[in-house]
Length: 187
Length: 162
Image (cartoon, rainbow over all chains, first blue to last red; front, side):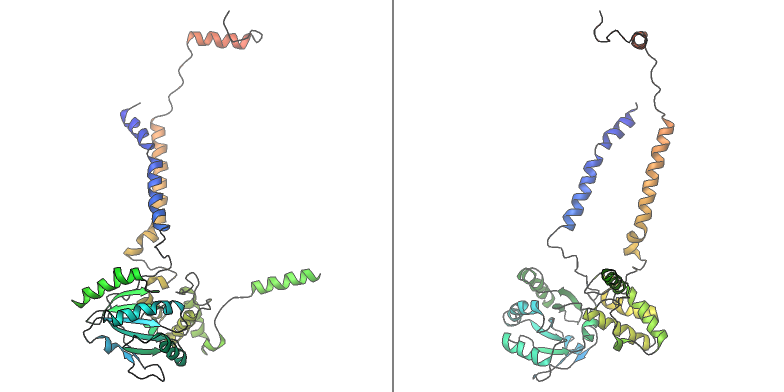
């Protein structure tokens, strides 16, 4: 038996270990509880905000919201919400905190919501939005690539989308991702 | 008999085509409508992610079906209508992923696996041909004697030599 074949045979003993290693990496990725297999990356990242112009919620004072409002040189949070969306209710406190404590400019897009229900919801929970546009048909949502509520976008000073959060903003995301990014973009 | 007709009825319900398109969504032009139906079957519903928008009852799927029809009525080609949605939702919205560097693994991975496997088998067979199994060594004189004793003398227990 040649030395080459001996080494070859010894290496063969390592095959199960290698297979185990590959499986371990695969499972570590696949079973990670922090990974959401349904999450989709946004193709809108680093794109300018899509063109749109929305009226305010019927019966509410204040301006509507259009793409031009996002190009005024200020970092802005745009939040898609509706009164029928339960996680939106949970997220609302965080949004109020961002608007009042952090003084972040926060705009809302009220997605497929009956005006009277949206008004009652904001009256109950407070209105942290500097501007709200009412997207009754959901068309503007589609233009932003929204596929569920809530969704939150961070717009930089030049009016480009820099971040998208699909789903409720939890404390961890707020402190580890959103706040640092807003600070960075505001500099 | 009653049970049989019930079973048949249930089977027929099961066989009925399932779609979510509502009458109000259907276009007057049957050719455009047929194109819209075909396109809708290639587009993924973003909410119920393994269903196409043609068969999904999700709100967003309905909106996208209407949108696809609007694009077709406006004169878009099928590819333009698809590109419109890909610009908003990414390649994920397509059930047939496009061929591009990011999807090479997806398209060529299976063929690569087959090639690797075939290569392994060929290498193994070639090595076996080059190094055929070592022929068994001939029996020594002692072994031959013992074999003969065993074969000829069935009565003598083989165990301990006397």
